[in-house]
Length: 244
Image (tube, rainbow, N blue to C red; front, side, top):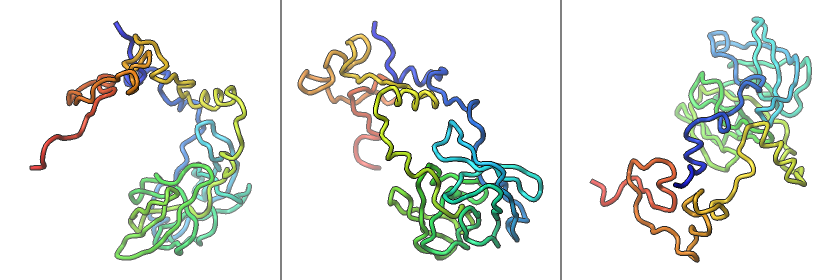
């Protein structure tokens, strides 16, 4: 009897495939939206800049004027003891957070909310930024780092500036050991054996059975409710036949 393939083991949810969130310092996000931020501005001070194992970008610890503390993604140029502002009346300077409707077109932004008040969902990794292309009818068009254009509500908040850590991908890893530790800190499965390099008992493509040279599995349609692993090498369209 064959063994479970990686997709099946991952679906079981063991610790091998879970994110080690207990190692992470905090989840960076905007402060909770309140009336003071909607109608005015809230000031805060950068108390510390840290490196969190769960994030490629550095995080900044912010102490706000109401004595509440939160962590944000640190933009380039942010300094200790620097004052940052959050609110509709904030100036569009690096590190400040304000609604998209109050940010000029062409300004670099990051940590954009998908819905007003969700505290940031888009553009959050190191070295990236987005730009506002156009505004109108309560919506704002933003060009994302992937070059795709996405429409947001003008009330969604974003932080001004480029995220720090832009040179991360330029430094080579040099050896597999560095890749191992890079993956280990986030509990990623590494190294991962190719399906065709496995034994026949470990994967349907094992012993070279997956490629056309070896006469791979037929392209028949897998059952609709097939579990992970059952669909390997087969087609699984969302529907068949004409639209009704």
